[in-house]
Image: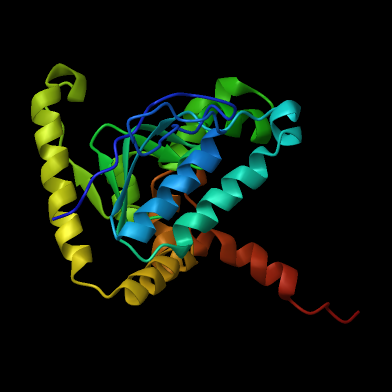
Length: 249
């Protein structure tokens, strides 16, 4: 039977992190969010407890002050701490999973998503601002990012989509929590069958394989975006013309 650490949800310093700390009957000393998350990971590793994270964040703040404050390093160190764990790690995206803030809490053996959640490396608005210099192109960016639970399951980015009540989890929190609990228990039972070192090795391999180029994956992505549908036959004439040897005069 697994023990439990209770979390205190307090946003401090880097707003993408949930401050979590084991409760020991006294007031915790103020520590920046990433360090407190890392401390909780260390406690879980020490006592052999699984780590369950719940992701709901728009992402890290993309400002100069945040970077000067060490935001990138904090995210990287948190990801490294999760990668080193030998206990079971399950991350669940329960709302908006955006950018480095989400990734910092999702270096897990299994990543689950609630049915209406989203998960992407950048927000559609941020992507549009970079690619098109105009946030009005956010719908096109969202189409290319493929951030929905069903799309990410197809791409292999997440392992399971958790059903929500009609209209969303907010309409029936009790039923939504029951579905989430069921998914977590089943996934945890699966991970408990693995040896600690094997679990860590498989977790690292999981992330090495993400984004690996394959022809089927390219076809899946291109076919999902009407504006990017290009067939090999359409590309061939131009390619052949470019590669053809010069004619002798």
